[in-house]
Length: 313
Image (cartoon, rainbow, N blue to C red; front, side, top):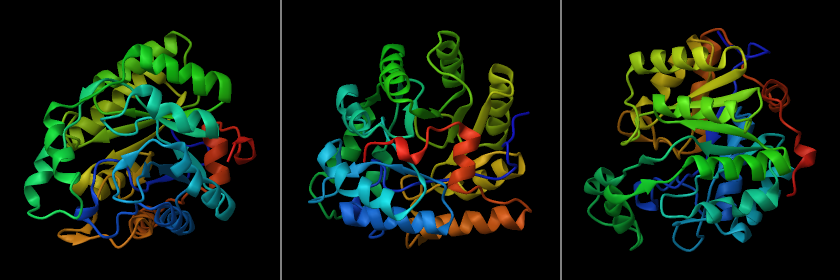
C-alpha cells in the first residue's frame, strides 16, 4: 500500500477549471484578480497545491492565453508558498498545442496530465438554467455531447517530454477510468515518467467511471498492482461526490482534491461561497479523523518536486 512519506494529507484545490460557467455560481472566479484572490485564500485555508486554469476576463470563457495566466501566476507565487499546478487539459475545445502554451513558458513544478482520450460531457448541466449571464455558456455546454477530450499516447508523450524532460515538471496524472491507469503504466514502461508518481483518481464525470465506493477500491487496488510503492494518490469526486469521496480517500491513506472546478456546492442545495470554504470543510474532516494536512514544503518532499524557486513566473 502506498502512503504519504509524512503520513499527512495533501489538499489540492482546483480554483476555476473549464467545466462550470459564470451563470452557475457568483463565487466562480474568472478575472485574474478573482482567480489570484481565490487561490491565495485557498492556500491560507490549507491547500498545499493550487490547480489553475485561466478564463477570459470579459465573459469567463476558458482561455489558454499565457498573457491572462501571467496576470495571476506571479501574484499567487508572491503571496503564498503553495505548489502551483498549471493545467495541460485546458478545455475540451482547445488543441494540445494551445493547452501547452502557458506551461512551457512558466516551467511550473507541477502540471495536470490527462491519461486518456475520452468522452467528457457537460450538456446535462445546461437544462438546469433558463437564463444565462453570457451568450457563450449554453452553447458551450450543449455542444459537449459531441466533444472528445483528446489525450492520445502521442499527446501524452509530447507533454511528458516537453514539460517533464525539458522543464523538470512533475505531473498530477488524472485518471478518469481504470484504463487510464493501464495507459499510464504503459507510459512508465516506455520511460516517459519517473517516480514518485502523483495519481489523481477521478469519479463522477460523464464519460468516466462513476462515483461508487467499489470503483474507488478497485482503482486503488489496480494502481497498487501497477505502481507498487512508487506512487502517491489523491481522489477527486465531481459534484456531490466531492466530500464523501475525499473523506473515503483520507481514511484509506490517500490525499484529496476539492475546489469550484469540481463542485460548486458546500452542502446539499447550498452554493459554496469560495474555494477556501471547501478547503476549510475538508481540512476539518481530515483533522477530525485524526490526520494532519501537509504543508506545501511537505507536499514538495513527498512528490519529488523541483521547488518553487525553479519556476519562471
